[in-house]
Amino acid sequence: MKPIAPLHLLIAIALLVGSTSHGQDRSQPSSVETDCLLMILDQVDLAAERDGLLTTLHARTGEDVAAGQLLFQLGDVESKARLEVARAELDQATIKAENQWNIRAAEIELAKNTKETELLDEVGRVPYLERYRAASNKDRSAAELKIAEATRREDLYARQVAEAELSVAEIDLEQRSSVSPFAGTIVKQFRFQSEWCRQGDPVVRILRMDRLTVQAIVNLRDIAPHQIIGMKASATFQIAGEQPIVMDNLTITRCSPEVDLDGNYLVWTVTDNRKLPAANGQPQWLLRPGISGTLTIE
Image (spheres, rainbow, N blue to C red):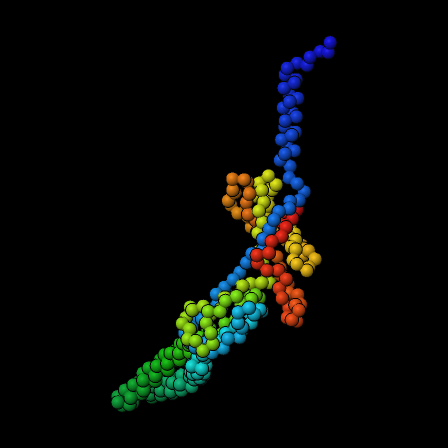
């Protein structure tokens, strides 16, 4: 008959086995695959920044636009005229501010009258009226010098005001032209050429297409939320007539703070997009918002 192991030894073995199994359950797989969805990264309703007539519309619904491309213009004839006036006023103010001859003339006059007063003092026996006239001329010259200096300061301030007014005129003209903030596609047109626009009225809606968001669902049992930020990933998309499209070198950049009852939570990364030649010869974006695929997180 075999000896029976002590009870405390059996309990220790059971605890060790349970601890080992529990540690294995918590280990994370080398990679996780999950469904993902392409979503919009940026979109904007480009609005008129000034009141005015929509004179030119350079792109319409469905057309692709590049970053920095001119999209529409408002009437700018009056703005251009105000800009020319502001430039002329700045030139005039600059000439006056740089003119120091009035100060120089006042300094010379003051020096002359001061010298005359000193010479009369040296002579000694000079009629009172003559001395009074010389002193008055000296005081008047000193006052005229102060007036000339004050006038110059006013001219300098006037030049600063003219510079500010020129900046305002340049901004007003610039805000009558609107450019695309990123590469994308115009998906909606709110105003048409020759329509009147008020400041803040949307003119076109642009959907960013050169970069898209990839959204996926991850479970707590696979990767913990506090560990997933910064992890590398790759996304695979299948489109009719194309080989599987694989977007490598992605990085998980955002993680939802909410977890559902099944332990699922959302994560996001961003992928670049590119254009491919189409049948009509015009390049078309390869990926589009709404396409589903598979995200592999390593």
